[in-house]
Length: 368
Image (cartoon, rainbow, N blue to C red; front, side, top):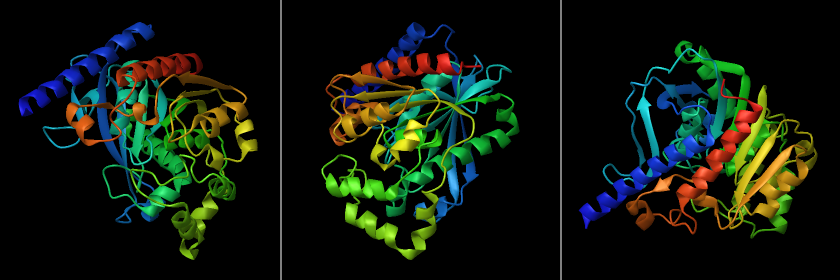
């Protein structure tokens, strides 16, 4: 039985990698690059409140076009030898493919996710010529203990992306490959919120609170399966005097200077935005979502954003649910995790999203 499970996991991995490569060949004009992966650390002051150990460290993952002779190895998530997710492949610390200065995509994961669980997307963009900078959001990622602060203070997330960008720009080896005049941002779920905030969306915490009071069964208002925080617990946390400064930060601009294009998948927490601020977003925005999403219901989230943002494009995938935007699952993952089974094959959803993202970013940024 164990051999059969391992064979199925390997087959799933090969199928996912093969489909990703084929999809990129079909949707991109340029040849596909080998993908490199590097890891950096930044220091972000707001992480101290969110991290369970009150550390200010911010983990950064960078995917980029690598030299042809680099050897990619599998990226996995889960127990060694029996991973739950197979996000793709990358060559660790590989040399860059060339001396081109390439467009940058900042990437934000969803509630309780990680940079790596979005590697199916990040490595696909790197394979097409982009430099992708992703983070593990403190207190709200799948590697560290989750915290109430990490769950509630979602408006601190754009600051994580800004800190990551600054750190990567300071890295002498990586910075010479960056075209800092061409920056895009992408995200899934609360990472979609992060992306819209980075483009100028302004948070209105009382508005979000009132929405959840009136719509407690909306998917974004219910306690999330990754970490259970009720609406009343969130309200209590926000009312505590020691958290006043963090709440006050929600009232300021969260925008990251230089953002030229925004791509979001199944965005969540859209009701936390001041509608007028979404109406003021001037850069192109592409929203991709599934019509079977009950975690970030389209009408109150992605579709609501599309109605308000002047240059928004909306693409709806029939039968696709919220967690279909996570990485490909192994047979072990399908057996162990409720987020793994899907009605629509996950690789099909991935290829649709990748093709859409590349067409969008190629039009509005260009890889270099």
